[in-house]
Structures are given as structure tokens and as C-alpha cells.
Length: 246
Ligand code: SF4
Image (tube, rainbow, N blue to C red):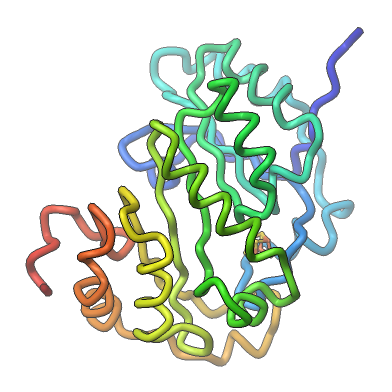
């Protein structure tokens, strides 16, 4: 019987920026269980049916054509762990010799645990959007299972694969106090990346009026919380520059 795969609603043939140190292609899966006001994937989250459906064979063809050149596939969304057949998709990509990185909001720890136990993942990038209390609901745009998200961080930190936790720093929700609390909650992590907030095309149009922090401020924040993770930098900065703003 032919295997079922999750629908693909976006595809990038190659990216150098979505898996550090790797050349990857990237697929985007529809729907999400959160409603982050600063989300830039509103079309995937709210109106996925309006997007073109891309057959998995398109990705397989790409991997075949670029064998030896493309390292792997980034599976992003939306929230990929909501799809029951995610494991089948990963196995399909792996059968073409590709490594797989999963982007997730961490709300489905049981899915992460299962994929990790079956050694189906080579890397994970997980959002840690806010401290693990009511402040999470504001950044997520809805109530969510904070304990589940916390559990995901523990599962990922116990794994022996490459991972990063990432926090998008929007002045409306996140300042140094929040970042300190987040850093303590994931204390001992291998990597905590601070990402610049980008107004424009946000799920909540009001967010488009918010002015991002200057990049230097983000670097100062990273310097303040750096002791909690082996590496804490602003996305796009070279790790060797850590001491510059410290
Ligand atoms: S978790 Fe938030 S930012 Fe990520 S896709 Fe869902 S709504 Fe968008």
C-alpha cells in the first residue's frame, strides 16, 4: 500500500541559512496550533488551502539531482509535528540519502521523543518563545500547554543530536527580564539563538508598527544571558565574536 505523506505547501530548492553549515532544501507543512502575533507564515497557518500543493516527488527529484551537493532537508511550517505521517516523510527523505532537520514549536513532545528514539532526526530547531509562565500565551497568541513545551526542551537537551533553541526578540513581548527567565529555563543548553524581530507581514497587523531593537541591543542581551548556554548569539553573528560585546 502506498504510504501517505503530510501535505507540502512550500518548497525551497536550496538554502544556506536555515541549517547552519549545511546546504539544504526546505519544505513547509501547513497549519499550526499556535497563533503568534509576530508569525510570518500566516498563509500556512490560516489559509493553507489557498497554497499550491507540492508533490513529495518534487523534493525527491531535487534530492536526486543534487546528490552529493545537498546535505539534507529542513522540515518547517506551520508546525510539522501536527501531521501524523511526519515520520513517513522523514523516512522518505532519508531514503534519498538526505539528513533531516526539524523546526518545531515544541508543543508535541511525544512526537519529538518518538522521532528521536527512532533516530530519524539529525537536528532540531525549537522555539522557546517566552518564559514558561503566562507570558507564553501572549507571544503564542493563545493558551498552550507550557508543560509540554518545557518537556520538549528536556527531551531535546537529553538527545545527542545537533539542536538549537531560538527566541525571536520583539520589544512588545520580550526584554532582558524575559530573556533572563528563558535562559534559566533552558540552562545548560548547547545553543540559544536570539533572532531579530522583523515587522511586515505579521499575523497580527499591529505588530507591523513595532520598531525592532537595534542589533547592538540584541547583542547586549545575548551577552547578559550568555552564561546559561554553551553558545548564545544573535542569529547571523559569527560564534567567534561572542566576546566582542561581552
Ligand atoms: S508557532 Fe507561531 S510562528 Fe511558528 S508557525 Fe505557528 S503561529 Fe507561526
